[in-house]
Length: 53
Image (cartoon, rainbow, N blue to C red; front, side, top):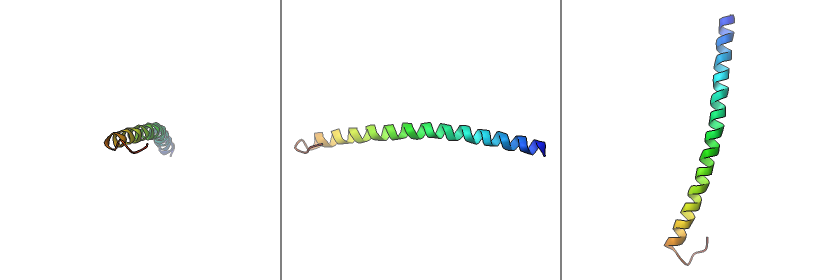
């Protein structure tokens, strides 16, 4: 029984570490999406010089 509890605790700790990693990756992804959107706006404005960003 003690071995099962230890294994469960290790699995929970691993899950928590992965969750923290995902939080950072999601933040990074959101920043990259914002930058992509800005680049797309610039590209669109260069295609249509009369449009306003």
